[in-house]
Amino acid sequence: MDLRIGNGYDIHRLVPGRPLILGGVRLDHPDGLGLDGHSDADVLVHALMDALLGALSLGDIGKYFPPDDPRWRGADSLVLLEQVVALVAERGWSIVNVDSVVVAERPKLKPHIGAMRAAIADRLGVEPDRVGVKATTNEQLGPTGREEGIACHAVALLQKP
View 1 (cartoon, rainbow, N blue to C red):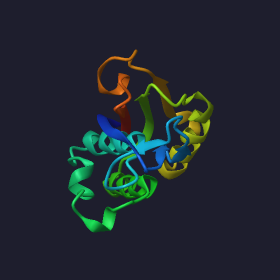
View 2: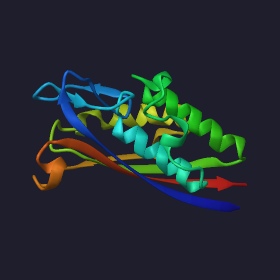
View 3: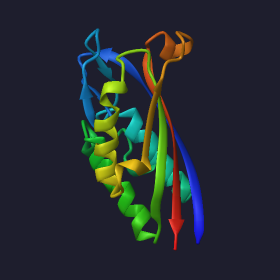
């Protein structure tokens, strides 16, 4: 059995007038803020896509979904994730598990983690117990700590039988 591991990272600014979507789940920010980006700016799903692509040395999401391409404007990141999963499967690999850490001061993510895991697992084609989603703050340090944005770190483990 062959194994590959990949890691991903993403960060987007918090701005007014945009929805806040994490892990495919729409959340309410206490100040009415959302993530700025060309697509829906779901940093959790973007970091997972980069981890999957990185495990197979396929580049990053900008290669497949460039931010200057109007086709991806406002795109649902879970739909983009399905396309990345298809690239993985086309090469004969399967997903063992993924894990992630979302870095955000607010809103509190704990009540939404189950829904995020379920949405991601559905698009990955794995059981929810193969999807780790954790949340932490940055203790008011740096851009995420000052609530200028939300970031996510992710890893993915792939196997080829």
